[in-house]
Length: 393
Image 1: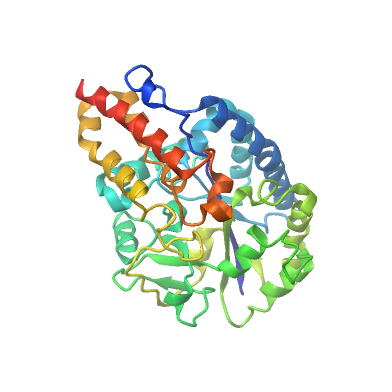
Image 2: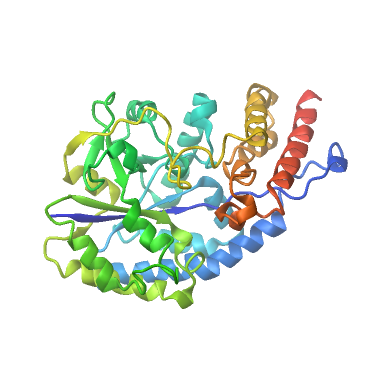
């Protein structure tokens, strides 16, 4: 019985303001509260509230047969609590259905696994406590920031006691195999790896409203037929995507909400198919093969590697220097400084510094609040210089 496993990523960073050289030593507030609230309000109205309402309706309509999972960063949940308690309540309402699962991740949506295992564990524990407080759930499945994954990480997460880890189904690692089964890292004993089916996921997340795509228009019936074609050659179809797909990246006018409204109905018309949360999927199916990822992979860009956040001199310098402050930050004992430093670890800051496709108006530019990656670097380094000076004092 093949299952559809929906997982949605929800994240909003604390964006830095235009922090100039002349602000150093004169102003210790680095974040653009006005911009952050504006973005949150916009996405809440276009995506979070209407999509959560739709998901709640679908769960009720299908008598609990429609199930979904979310990974919501701690910094996004903080902003919901501060500025949009109505959005937070809508996620609580979903949690109360018993058909929604929340996934563990790093609280600050960081790259800490690469640079500080100690900070990585601290953020996981901080996020876990928040999920317990807000939704009364104990996460059993982990996803690293932007699906960053390798064998070492899988074993590390296994040792922390998690049942499964989510990752990208990278073609070069699958080597002709299907992502529609459960796998395991070669150095792990128990933990299972759920691989994203990126082709079907990206049909919704990226190609849905592309006028040049040959499959236009993508209807719920057509997509359900594609999933049904997996029968006999897969046990779980993992559809992993940003939640902002609904209403923000794919506008309401594109028909994305109607697509989602009817998709469960068409999927469930095939008696062998169902919807499962990530933990239900893990409990239902055995590991079928080894997924061997020596190098870190991700779901970002065509390379599916870390080049969205690391690799150019600006990114490498900025991230190395911010992590060098770790001992001083914790040694200060100052809760505000510690929280500020952690917010500066959020991966988005380094994503905004990416120069790979900037001149071509790549997706990086779409997400960035700055005029250029060089501005993103300058504002980050100025903020970090002030933070460093505060620590010295």
